[in-house]
Image 1 (tube, rainbow, N blue to C red):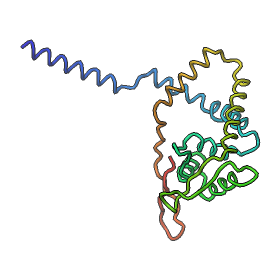
Image 2 (image 1 turned 180 degrees about the vertical axis):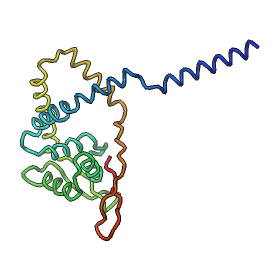
Image 3 (image 1 turned 90 degrees about the horizontal axis):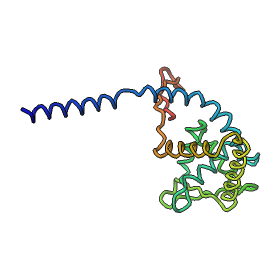
Image 4 (image 1 turned 180 degrees about the horizontal axis):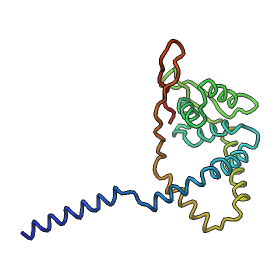
Length: 202
């Protein structure tokens, strides 16, 4: 009898914990709402000013994003698949593959010479992108200019506040960023009646 009561009590305790874990934490919901209040300032004000400082008028913001993407996502061989760049720019800027091709050509030829493109050893239809020594040096300049900008822009922040900010971002990006689930929308077909489905950009 005692054993049965103990088992029942344990089951109720487990059920209570599970129920608690499935309920939304009002404090978290409040913080999520507060974070959204900073979206415009972080993304468009601070983010754009930081990008401008990093690109320094030498490359556009989109070209800077390409260089930063290549420098951040290259594999052990120092190469990145071109289709990965196309996918990222499609998601970030809604850029077509033809625009990506032009952008990569501009970054690969004089006067920049920041990238090289070559056929993938695994597929003749795929290309791999590599930073040149000039490109790698420019990315380091971007990093330095970005650091210099933040040093000037964040003079009102204490060392302790900055340390907490670094800890926050380290925890935030300890897991992959979850992509938004966007429902597909019908768009008019090019010929005839009806609609065709447009692939969702997430």
